[in-house]
Image (cartoon, rainbow, N blue to C red; front, side, top):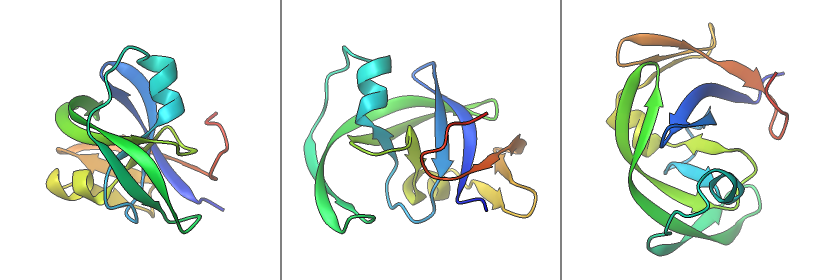
Length: 128
């Protein structure tokens, strides 16, 4: 059974697997992914986020105006860096603002008129 819809993307020109997450209010990037792929990045404002899975607060940092690309379209978006399992959660803030259309029947995501095939996977499983 599919529990996550994942699209291939780039964040600041580095490959990232982005989980389309309509339950997340904001877009979040894994602290581990940032440490591995952008070790010199300066973290922004410190904030607290609700970890819905655990029902507790977790620490995060805001990064403004990050270059995010998928489906041949480039966006500037703010992200929160936090200790999450997946590389990236594309939250409602991004999905709604950019009018992203999700088709669960065909496992596709429409980004600025371009159909992006998505992969279904379980949380924590690697992509093929």
